[in-house]
Image: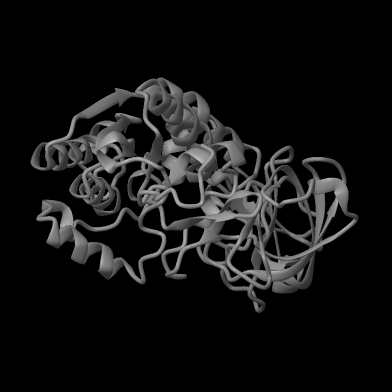
Length: 381
């Protein structure tokens, strides 16, 4: 809204009292989103908690550390009851199946290494849930993500979290400018996860010591292959393990059991050189292995780019940035060469190992904390 220079904004950026500012908090049942909800309620905001039931895989409902399953819904509801704000559970199982799980399975079958958490934020939480927040007449939606939203000269900007070890920018690169305008991230400025847990204890939350989730929520114990086999019966067709020089070294029980860069568990012991998975050929059902140097990639094709810069993406021939090609890796210097409004070729100044189709390539300001968006790696050279 247009504001006078003397108009005082509340902590969420609105020129009215917290009691007149409705905020929907996306509550997963974990400590982060619970702290956000409790903090905003404590500050006097009109808080509405919403939890999405995303899947029901039997045993997963009782699995600790799984987002949006049975225990977590209970924990979110309890926080709302203790803090005195309404809480709703929405059944999004069909939406989640169509928008996230099916693509996850199909991507693995196509030899890619998908990142379903990004698709969940993009297609479910920041799309359908955000629309639900608008339907509830909320002024904004808040989440427990570790990322910062700052106001720049051209509107809201996305910035890395203050705590680099908790930063979730890799998983949020596809947040659009329109979504960013509506979203709030109250934890992004905190110095550490310990600070979040201290707030949880301060607010008297029972989830203060609840463990962080580790695995993809719908993949119990990180066993991707078994989930894919259930979703796509017959997916684990056997095939050959082939050396990059053409030698057949053995057989495998399905391409879905392997990822680019994998070294352990190949089942081809007794060789003098260490070998890594360098290619997954779905058409021939071959797992191609080779020496480590074959993993080095300098040029990466990227598509479905979400650009968060101030100028149009294809208004320049080159953008000099840093990029992440895996969530756990530090940003590396790179040059982006736009090929269209949402496609590009990314040249890494230092080659990276294990770049895989299906992963995200996220763009960062080399001289600051701003995120300029990113895209999807869609095939390897």
